[in-house]
Amino acid sequence: MKHVLRCSLVTFISVLICSCSPVVHVEKDPTVNLGSYKTYAWVDTKSSKDENGTSASEFAKLSIQNAVNEQLQHLGWKQVNDHPDVLVTYDILVERKVEERNNPVFMQPFTRFYYNPFFHRWAAIYYPSRFIGYNTYTVPVREATVSISIMDAKTDKKVWQGWTTEAVDSRFLAKDEVRSSVNRIFKRFDASVLKGAEIASKQV
Image 1: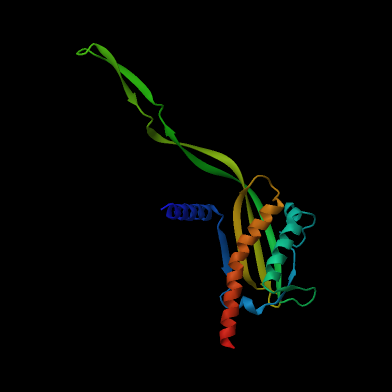
Image 2 (image 1 turned 60 degrees about the vertical axis):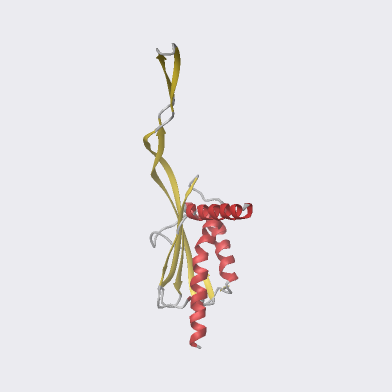
């Protein structure tokens, strides 16, 4: 019985953690077999062709590229300087938003006294705390969205894009936050590549 309760508790905690994890979104060109690509190179994105200077996201460049390189090379992809199969880029957008929160409100418990004339004594009636509604308020938050995009090098066509958003404490993402976001995104990319490779092997 204890073993069953322990397993149930572990399952409940696992489900709770998963439900609280930031969601990963993916867009994929259904006509493209990601398993056919083997080499890649990095490119930078700009808000305009004439943009110069360093953006806030540049501070995370090394961390995010290292994390992505690790994931791609784990799948057998190789970073090259000439004639890559695909081009890889990233974007980090940190925005200020207002989040609405609701806290339950309970009335304070209290006691009232009455006099019992039949037995000539005082007695007490206890009124427990009761739910009376929600206190709604707003708080400022920062949300960081990490996006990874992959384009076919020959056609410049976007073949895959994944992104995830989570709350952060500052306008600069810490190394651990970057790696966590990249790992979540590439769990979905891994599935796409493996599925593409499986389809290609059946066609041979």
